[in-house]
Amino acid sequence: MLQRSERTLWRTTTRGLVVLPPRGEPIVVSGPAVPIWELLAEPVTAEELSERLAARFAEPAHRVLSQLIPVLQRLRDAGAVVDRERH
Amino acid sequence: VQWSTVNVTDRVSVSEVLLAVAAHGLAGTTRTLPGAPLPDGEWVPFFRAVLSERLTGLLAAAVESEDMPTTPSQRDAVEDAHVQAMARTLVLERVMLETVDTLSAQNIDVRLLKGSAFAHLDYPDPALRPCGDVDLLLRGGQFDVAVRGLEATGLRRVQVEPRPGFASRFGKGVTLRSADGIEIDLHRTLAHGSYGFTVPLDEVWQSASVLRLAATDVAVLSAEDRLLHAAYHLLLGARPIRLLQLRDVAEIALYGGLDAGAVRRRAALWRAEAVLSLALRETWSQLEIADVTALSRWAELYRPSESERRQLAAYGRPGNPYSIQALNSLSYISGVGSKIAFAGSLVLPQREFLEARGLDRRRWIVHGLRATRRQLRGGR
Image (tube, rainbow over all chains, first blue to last red; front, side, top):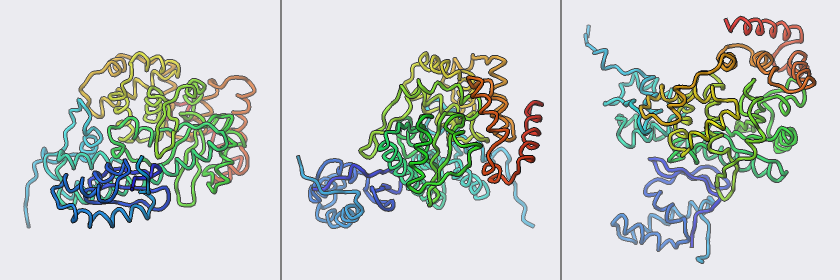
């Protein structure tokens, strides 16, 4: 399960989401970053995330997942998203 | 030769567009944005001013809502600038949180001022309000310990005090700077000069709101005190007035859910009624806010006393801020010993203070006497 780190700061802009993890440089996440970030407020798997986004944007879930995984990986590497257990 | 005509009434004033951006989204403003993209000759100075006035968030919102028409390249420039401003603001917020952590670990009380506090608590979206530095209020009794603690983390003081301990006893505060140029303003009080001595700091410390940011609770001023501080910053701070400062006052006054009576009582306690009324009038006038509220009506009717007028007038004058402090603050300092210590620090400051200004003692006194004479003549 993935969830945004509670120590991460962020702002929304028309270019997407500007995220500042606890360490490192700011990251700009473009595309449908704001809904991704909203969904990451609670622990969620990449598959669940892609299904919800697919429903919202009327796209096949497998296509959303393939685009989503590198974004989530980048956010996790930066420390903006962390692994969590679902309660 | 190519001839062309321009209808002068079609040309827009850059400053009028800036004010319309500063007012964009406020209920009751009659300021309007241009109906077509600005030509390059007007866009370039306009956008430069947007950057220096830190209006990128408000401009981005106006562009996104299509209230401010732009060309594709202008839109790109606005979006880029907004992303840059937000990235910078987030870095400042992280520095602020680290600073608060460092101070809290030493049991030093802190109140976050302005920037992030306004952005998160007083604006509908914090992305509308970028920050330029970090501002923290500290208790006078903990001030020097706090500065030393932060200096130990690698921060450096920007200014030398007139004498050791001056800032913690009489000054508005000090600025610390990190190796990468981030400035942290540590405030002992909320204005320089005489108004800094009449802020009821014990009362300010007793009432606080809390901003939760990145899993950290940060204490901030109460909404009433934030409005008074925004008014101080607008009228008693550096000139010229920044448009974002007008917007800060408007946001808190219009949307802060404040009780007008409570604000007026708080202003009376601060001895700040003249400042608050003038700041509200300036904000309503510059941003052309047509809506009349209980506070704006009070501000319109408030008539400052002669002594309030004199006290306020000192802030608009050019000259040495130390001579302004000396002349206008002395009567607000309690106790003969404190008055002597204050005056002595300014008349005979330490050598390092003079060296930082490229002056020796004789030139400092001559400089001070000239500035004092100008002050006594009314700033002419």
